Each structure stands twice: as C-alpha cells, then as structure tokens.
Length: 225
Image (tube, rainbow, N blue to C red):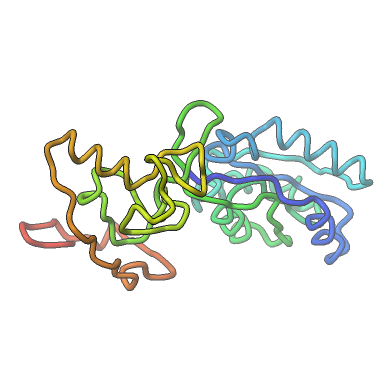
C-alpha cells in the first residue's frame, strides 16, 4: 500500500490562495489513505473543521472506494457534482496517484492534501515499513525474500558494510543488519548466498510505468511476457 503523511497546511492554504479559493470540496481514499489514517472519514472531518476555522466554506466531502481508480473516481465525483461545482477548489487526501485521478475527473483546481512517502508493508495495525522500491529488477530470489536495497539504510545491494557491528545496523542501531538477516535466512533454508549480487538493471524501471493487461499475451515457457 502507498503510505502517506499529512502535508503542511500552510502549503495547502497557499495553494488555495493562489487560485482565490473561498470554498473547498474534500476527497479522500477508502483504501491506502484510510488504512494509514491520513485520508479516511475522520481525517476528512478534521480537515473540514480546520478549513472552516480558517474561514473557508466546505461544500462537502467524499471518500471514494479507491482514489487512484479512474472509473470509480469519475463515478464518485459525478455523484457529488453539485457540491464540487459549488467549490472553488478540491483538496485530495490521498497519494499522488489519487490526486491525479481526481484532477482528471473534475474541472476545478485540485491540490494534494498529503505527501506520498513510500510503498509500505502493513506489519500490524498502524505500523508500516518500506520493503519494496518497485525497481523492476527484483533480487528477492537471491536474497531470501529480503530486499537489501530497500531495507538497508545505505541501499547496499551487497553487504554487510564496514559499519555493521555484532549483527546490528550502524544507521538504525535498533535493527539487525539486512545483510545479516539475508545470510541467516539463506542458511536456514540450506541455501548459499551468491558471492556478489550483480548490479541492478535500472533501465528496467521505465518512467512513466504503464501496464495494459488487455494487450498481454499468454506467457509461454522461456517468455518474460
């Protein structure tokens, strides 16, 4: 899931002032931002109260099922077209993908209300950790399912580094070194660590990423498609 954090409200207010907005419609996300407690109903209600306290009219708010789903967001905004038309601007409490989807669905100025910070695993309720950088060249087959680039604060593909001490990371001193964990898990599975993990192919990370399942052919043996 995409982990988000609240944006500095001074920046949001500056955005609203830049278009002379006096009234605002708020949009949230029923998935990631709701789980992260940054863009669900409680957070939208709090944002509405804050905006009202600053003198803005809040014409309404909605939490779509998935903010980054273009079809669903267009449907949600059509349901609230009156409230959105009455607003001078829309503030979206979701990741950047959701903000762009809303911006594509309405004709009003749309501004982000959150910062997207990382792709996170849910460790337990309210606790998230970054485990993947969506690099397009995965090495988890070689590293026992632990991504060294993401979980090592130095982003080292090979390690441990010279700062590792007694199995612990020198940067995040309360954490075990990612490379120590990798080697232990490989040993527990009866596997041998490769001597050197080859450099990543950064060309595999194409921007902007796109995938059209409608064009995807049935994969065959030896095919990467």
